[in-house]
Length: 99
Image (cartoon, rainbow, N blue to C red; front, top):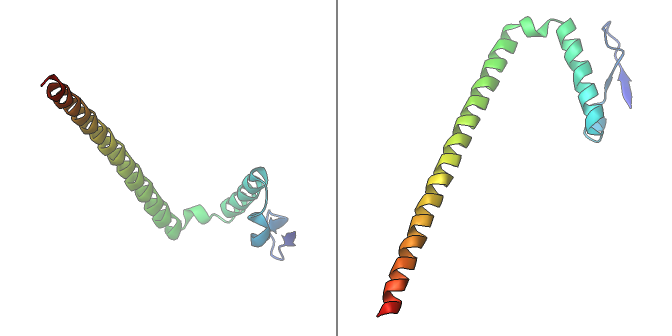
């Protein structure tokens, strides 16, 4: 259900927190857009805390992407090593069969 705000705001109502979790994705996006517009109206993006949080989120995303890239590289290297090992085992097996 919707909860009516008592303070003057460009928003008429914000969705209750418990109900948002059960909504369809489209409804969640709509609720997020509505909340974003309210935050912009209050000029929250111009606060110092916002800049700090934005920088923190940016750094976290950069770190996660770097770690993901390194993990992919490690998996690629491991697959090459495994392929090389398989080839070596096959060569040794062929030599042993010849004897």
